[in-house]
Length: 112
Image (cartoon, rainbow, N blue to C red; front, side, top):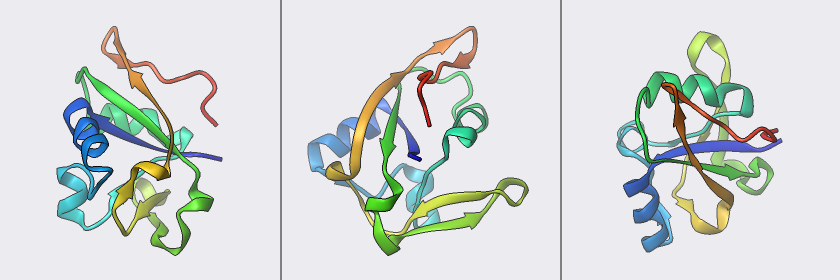
C-alpha cells in the first residue's frame, strides 16, 4: 500500500529545488505533513483543492518513513497518515500531474 501527497506545482518545484520540504502551508501550520491513502485521496482533492489546476500527486511507501509516520484520526474518525519530519525527495517513489477534468481531479487508475 502506498500513501499520497498532493502539492501545488510551485510547492513541488520548491521541494525539488531544496531536496526536502516541511510541506504546504497547512502542513507547516499543523506541524506535520498530511498524506492520504488511495481511498482518501479523491476526497482530499475535492475538499482542499477544489477546482485547482497544476497539481502534482506524489506516492510514497509508508514502510520507509519509520516512526515519524503516525496514523491519526481525522475526517469522520478515519485514520490518516501524518509525517512528523521533513519530506525528502528520496522519500518520493513517483510523481504525476493531477489533471482537472470537468471539475474533478483525475487520479491514476492503478493507485493502490
